[in-house]
Image (tube, rainbow, N blue to C red; front, side, top):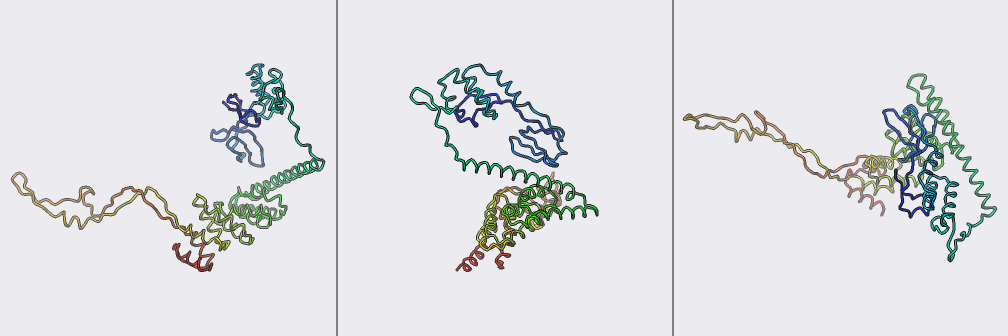
Length: 410
């Protein structure tokens, strides 16, 4: 696959050459004959976390048939070496390839070889940290030396990051085990007891480091599990819990879960919540607009009244099928009476059997056609939110709502 060098090694950004980069990804074979070229595969409980060029995805373990390892980085490097000559240009291309692959020591080796073969190779010199002074290349001034305090702060930050990552991983494994063993069982007497046990374990979690793993694991469960997630998050005061509750109130597919999340948010009395939900109302997705309106109603967000009024209705342009009903009895009475025709010397009395274009004997018909029309869409969820917030009901009359709002402000 051709690849124009444009990453990490700053000096390579100006190159127009192309290198052949061998894919080192593992091949993940899925049910149904599908495959994914994965840069990274990580087993996390009952799912594989697969990182590829298209993003990161969690795929159920049972859907994965096999994982076929790709070539190692060492194998790729040996193949790439054979493609380039022992020249300044060849080694510089190799240095760029190594930089893209994250092979820092090999990159440095090839850059040094470049200036051995061509001491005045500007790109390699710059990549190695040289600057030109007159006719000579000299090392640029080294970066500022860190003080003892700065080094100590960096060390502590690194230690803290490692501790946090470890705690998050531990909670993820524990919560996944509770979900798989207690919350995912089928609905029978035994499973109800199992769910109650799992619920007790989840509700007993108070460590704020568990908020992220709780949301990540339980949001993939069925409706009772997601309801449990809302209850668990409601017990945390941290902003991370609020963030996840807002997303559940806006995007969960179940109306009951959205309602529970909205009620949990309303109990917070946090003005930032209403502001965040108001912004979601301006989504291009119709469902999100309606869900945001419902949440604002539960929050009793008076400041959102003008936003809601603006969203009461909308107009859309679309092609629609129109059926025009035609009542034909009067037409036949006027125009379908018996009439006499001369034919072969005889006089024939003829009465039409019906209207030919509609079919024999038709008295009522319909003509279908398609036309571009502007359709008005009225959002009852927005109206109900306005009623819940204000105690008023002006239907879908925007002017009446805004008159009430203006008088209230005065």
